Length: 62
Image (cartoon, rainbow, N blue to C red; front, side):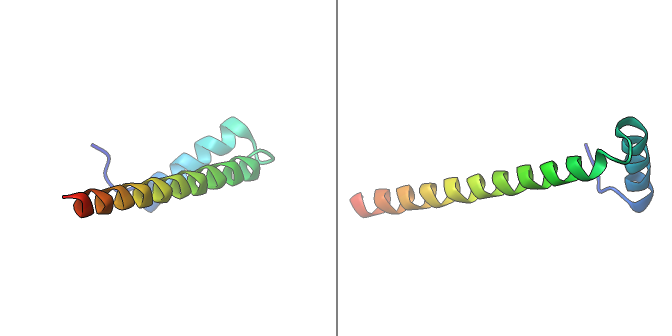
C-alpha cells in the first residue's frame, strides 16, 4: 500500500508539519519521535530474545 517516500514527498510532509506546528515545536517533535522509535526497537529486541530463549528451551525438552 505504501511505497518508499522520495525527496519530494518528504519535503511536502516537512512543509506541512512546519505550517501546522511551527518552527519552535519541530525539534521537540523530532526528538520525541526518535526516542519513541528507539524504545520500540529496544522492546522489539527484548521480545525477540525472549522468544529465541523459549524456542531453545522447547527444543531441549523434545
